[in-house]
Image 1: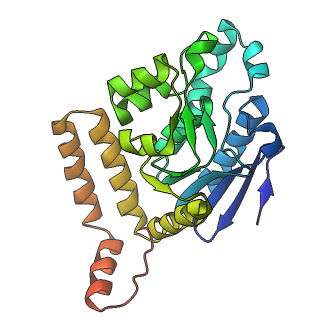
Image 2: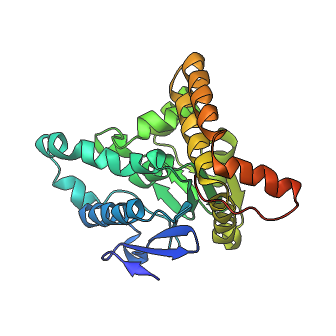
Length: 262
């Protein structure tokens, strides 16, 4: 069932995969107040649906998103930022903290706040017409919804400085080369590739997916010793689950496993 959350976003399910679509193509899917509130409502829906095994974020139209709505930016003050930035950052951190994998399927322009949105996702798949830019500096500010943080982790300090301080636009091939995206496909194959991968992961054991995602996040943000300690804890938990026994038994019996998330 397809649900609209206002003028900017829709949310529907295909089996165990939830699909968030940026749905204001005429407005270049710009990010503004209404967009952000609609996104929050969809996140509440995702949190309440325990059957979901994956999320795909895509867009209608020729462009993923041209970034922040400059009309929104005109009304922003330091007081507004002090009152709201933690909330805004949590909207994009939500994807990284979610227990299930999140895939961004990107076509056309992906600028500014839209790039920060996909940085919080687990896997980024781009069409061959995609273009990326983080141009906040030219408008007098620095990325503040994870741009300087996650981009640096993803592509390294030098490339992050080139893209953010230099405000350089890059195409999909260069994005793949520097590690900003993980998969590059032809435009007509974008959504099919994203959905195929999402469905594949959604049918894996939920506990294994959750701990694998969190383990990778921990490893990216902490010491080797801390990451190895997390591996010890998650392995102790996973080795006591019904799903582990089911996965091994089904493989040996050459049948499709039935996972229950416990």
